[in-house]
Image (cartoon, helix red, strand yellow):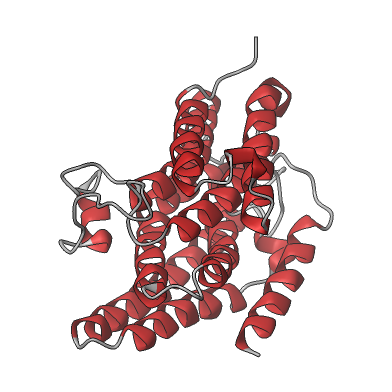
Length: 299
């Protein structure tokens, strides 16, 4: 029942996100630059909701209540997403990330439901996703994306947007959508996070990569493959929203191809990776890393 409710909730939000509206900015929400101020305020309110949920979940984890921590983190995203008007906020990276997080969590939870460490996998996924939203999404959304997407068409005194920096931040965001999955499930050998913000959310409990199902994936091979399937599809969608989307067609094609290949494998047709999890992990990791390291305009 809970999964069905979340699925319905995500479906409604997805329809709203895809309905109408131009891809490239300009809105009169709130008047002058009030559109930007309105969405920025909404984002900050949702960050507070998520921070409170994360703090509560941290205490629950310390007391060994993994299921309680999972429920708290999931509810935090549900609460944040429900306090939104999708038709107004669909261009916010924060809103996209929160709604996508619910879909990702549902996919990972279903993928690992028969595994012994399913609760730990789901919890670690949610913890790290909170870190991704707070440390990797908030910055580019508040600094570049919202001021551009929600500036008033009639505001003559609004700050000018550095379009080159805006596009760079957008591409970096698409890259990090995939990279954080790789770092979570196939981390660096020292287990350290990339920056201080991520270390806060990922925490000292992160440990070096350990063998699992004949691979170097920690927590869960199935969870990793599902998360990478969805995140590559999301990154491709975001590049399609770029101002220079035609130029990224080759990268979008590669991301979609990898996502489709993983979806086929995850659904049960294991031929794409010779019916072997270790091969699926090794090749998908190498392909994803190569794609995101070379995101640039097609020649």
